[in-house]
Length: 378
Image 1 (cartoon, rainbow, N blue to C red):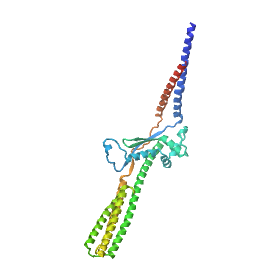
Image 2 (cartoon, one colour):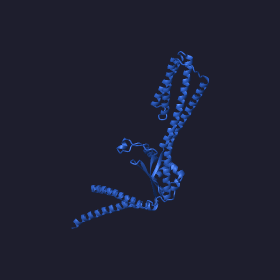
Image 3 (spheres, helix red, strand yellow):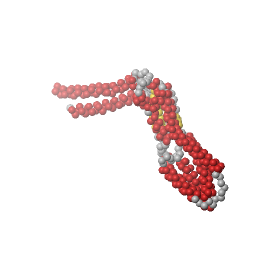
Image 4 (spheres, one colour):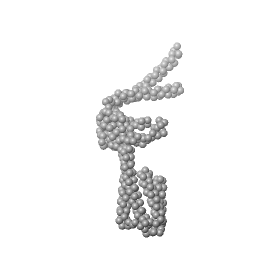
């Protein structure tokens, strides 16, 4: 009887020891992390207030419907690209610098706390401040509505609201700078073109007035001279048309674009042909009289072209100004920021339960592996 009971008692003791080890390990690895994390949240980590806002980048002129839009697929637009840039800007050190200068960023996160991870020293360097800010701001992009949702966390409702308003203001200033830079370059180029065409127009006007005052002649033109003058007039008309096209296309294409290069070659060829036609006309019978009339027509055509080019430059500049108004972008906050009324104190309890469940899963996997190894060794 004694021989049978001894192994049974040994097996029972072994089972009890195993259960005791599992129970102690469960307390250590499940309840331990959970209690420590709960104490950290309750005693050290300060509660935070979140301010949410949603915005979109919109232009004054709506984009036309394309083939993808007909199929219900949103194609990338300039507004979408601008929204992406704004999202990156919100999480960048440039945003941190702007908030530091104008929206009391340092004061918002330098408040006393028992948690060293929740404090940003006022003299923290840019890299550390940027990493800290990225933990306090969340940016989500919605491709369907081409909008962004931003959440800013701080330790007081006032700080959270102020920083969220600062994010919106600085983002809109960025969008304005991007659009203004491009349009300013176009407007300055158009104004330089106006000044150059105005000077050419005034010079052509002065030459015409001087010629009419000094070299006007009413000599009849012989038939060959009339034909030569007609050819020169036709070439001048073509030159005026090509030069007008060049002035208009210069507002759209780059200076080295193939379209502009080809157009300049055509103008050079027409100018060479005009020079040859004038030379032939000067050598025709009735050379003296017809030469003066050809010269007069050439001066008049130069004046008319300069006048037309000046008018075209004015129209192009006005078109650029109108385009700058249509292309201006705006940050539209369709969900404006509001001062939060509740902190995330109670919501943090969900994190405690998440730690409890995660610890339990890890403990269960570890206990299973331990049992398999123990049984294998025995």
